[in-house]
Amino acid sequence: MTGEVLVLAESSGPAFRKAALEAVTEGRRLADLLRVSEIVLAIGNGLKDPASELGKYGADKVILADDPLLAIFHPDYYRQIALEAIKRVNPSIILAAATSTGKDLAPRLAIHLDTAVASECTHLEMENGKLIATRPAYAGKVLLRVKVNSSPSIATLRPNVFTAREAVPGKKPTVEQIAFNRPDSRMIVKEFVTQGAKKLDLTEASVIVSGGRGMGGPQNYKILEELAEVMGGVVGASRASVDAGWRPHSDQVGQTGRTVSPMLYIAAGISGAIQHRVGMINSKVIVAINKDPEALIFGFADYGIVGDVFEVVPALTREMKAFYGKT
Amino acid sequence: MRRVPDTAARIRIASDGKSIDTSDAEFVINPYEEYALEQAVQLKEKHGGEVTVVTLGPEKTTQVIMKALALGADKAVHLKVDKIPEDPGSIARAIANELKGSEFDVLLFGKKGVDDDNQQVGPMVAELLGIPCITQIVKLDVSDGRGVAHREVEGGSITVETTLPAAFTAEKDLTVPRYASLRELVAARKKPIIVKDVQLRALSLEIISVQNPPPRPPGKIVGKGVDAVPTLVKLLHEEAKVI
Image (cartoon, rainbow over all chains, first blue to last red; front, top):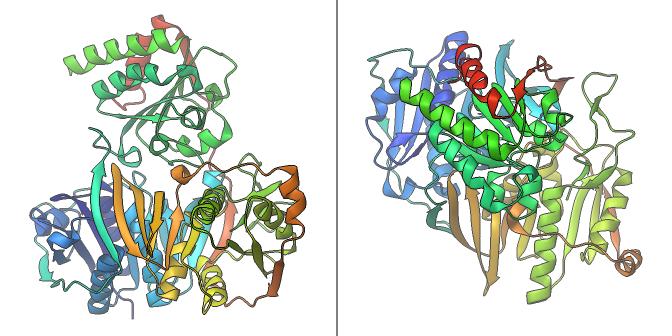
């Protein structure tokens, strides 16, 4: 008999992460295919109306673990909660977002359940009751189709690839609580330090404005920050500019940085080397601004402007301001 | 430590359609493990002790093991297999079996291999050994049997403290790897490499096929300089519909 679909939904403050809601939507789709229920483990602290929030995205039942100690991911605490929920549900499929939390937790669960994880999946399907996942490898230079041979099958879903869809307005899933009894742990989670005022992570942003070596120096990123701010986006960087110390590594897009898939990726002064390309090629729309008409980036950008970033970017910021002022 | 094709290498799908043809690729130490190794060597320089590199891979892994020994590792254990399996659980069990019963304070991994991008082996080994594991770290301080690490996460970093022994997985910012001098490369030849044949268990995760990603349709040059900007905004709104 096929077990249920269990989705681990992490939160940031009182709200679920967008990537978690994407996983809940995909979990709903798989549950319908398998004709089973979708059960969502909501985990966090002070969650705002978790049942109706998750119900909208398709959850049939919510298992709620809400505790001040669960505000920030702690491997031992989250593992205990997840294993308890898994014991109650006995799922055949477990989904989580491929966030820093999901990618840390999923392999730990796999060891305890003696099963395997398909990481950072971009597509899921069922074949003869087995989960088949498509996932990029070699930083996206190839796509692998992988099969999880053991049960439950675990998959983490790459953020921004699946769509979070409010499908069932007004649905009220049943809620079951998990009481959190703090386990013994040798790890103490001390504090969470936010990076300045930046609220959105690159992997979750829908607009990214990235700068490369063509930006000339760290002081010049101001024009990219202004453009990003007007568009509600965040600033990224190429490896060259991170290695030069102009930007922090957390901003790096590419093979040894983040893999992103925003709606709009604006590459300013970026040549488009393979290791950068693989990190952003799955953006919905790519815009390139570069003074070198031969730059590799024009080979795979949807729209290109050949020109000086120091002239074009401020002009684009003004134009976007006018555009958003109108709509 | 994992032996991987250089990140600049072109990746070709093998004729069986379910693996990668690496016959003409250049191999390197997985970049994330270079950061981890550098951290290990820095800890040794500060606190004393010994750095052992453990790697699972084919015969040819010797070449990257020599590099690691030149970069400051004292000895190496090579778990020899025909090829690195596609199931991270299988790798983790072989490494955990090797480490069981051995004494160490700090166990460092790269956060992921830049080949399979699974990002699973570090926390899996730690779970198998029953020791703490802090993943994706950008900073590590060790003193008096404790480690304090900074994890890089969405929107910031988390400080986590643990007692040792513990495992950590390295993010890029952890260290800046050094270069090996010619003298160190020569000295590496005298350092011990213990080679063991290992049996891997059946795979729970299996590759069915490998495909090239769908090509992107060719784009267009909107124009030159600031004059092209209004057209670009119009196209993004009306044609691409992303704003």
